[in-house]
Length: 273
Length: 160
Image 1 (cartoon, one colour):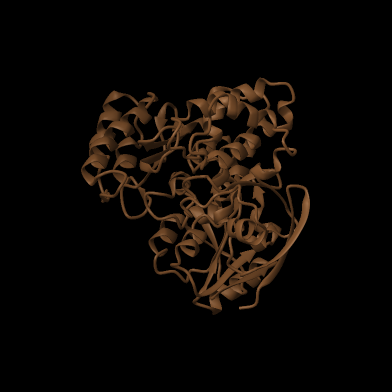
Image 2: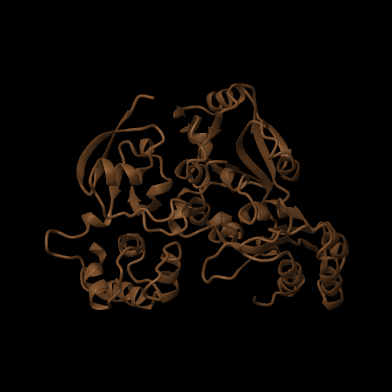
């Protein structure tokens, strides 16, 4: 039978998660409770964190830190996080957004996890706490690579550098159902410019591989270029590098491969969907 | 595993019950407390028929652990009417034939109530967004959208 442990501190929760392989964190419940309702999760301990630090947001400095328990609704309520409103609004309806957390989104299986795609484009780091020790930061990409193995500890926060120009972060979620649907794919691009040329581009995809992925081919061809038609054309040609999309109930692998360059081109050109 | 006590205000009344640790709020409301307005649809957070307000914010009761509701204010569609007197939102649903089979209606009403409490004069797009997590397989949504927009412009809509 399932038990629930409520922890007043992050270290207490991290200690339980480290010492009990059947313990699992529950944040907003939008992932874990699905398994409980389906009878797939019937044994172990659900660990709940009430530490205020878990839902803390530090958004005004150069380095932004969002507690893993921060919800999508909290992101949408923050004017300072306007550049993240598009990916936050892409998560479910209002009721889901009241519950769904940033930390949970890091664990959402493809084709979910659109907020994580935006975090990848921001070069975010994940703060992990294992046992009762202090936290350590790890690149989000590395965290995702080890996610299925588990045992990395409690995700306490995500950190990233605040975009100097918030209008340089772009996000598109492509779904078949309007206004909301599960992603066919999602694209996030952080394209800082220096003297009219892209500098340190970060482009990420959701639903184009088993995990949210960086589009390194696109980043490479855009680096140092003005965002003109030849650069956009080159980016479209490099768009599928490293992609391993799945065929699922939402779309086929073929369809995802066909439409990704189209939507990437439109995003880079600032055209509507 | 021992059951756990949980106490909250449900539609303005103090209620207390015992729940299994992993019980969701929906089961607690329906089986434990006899409030059958929120429905069990998908159990996956997809359909929205179990939407309730927790401290004024919409939540899916099927994905909410009951024990996390200790001390909170829970509102369901059951608490909207005052005896036979319906609220403007409910009247508008009737006037616009916004309920056909009726299964989605409590969730729609609750989602709309959360919207109107926050934004008494929503645009059509804001209404569409507010009910975007609630599935209706009968109406095609248009009567529901029209009802919410009508309720927003009705006298006393803020009560909705």
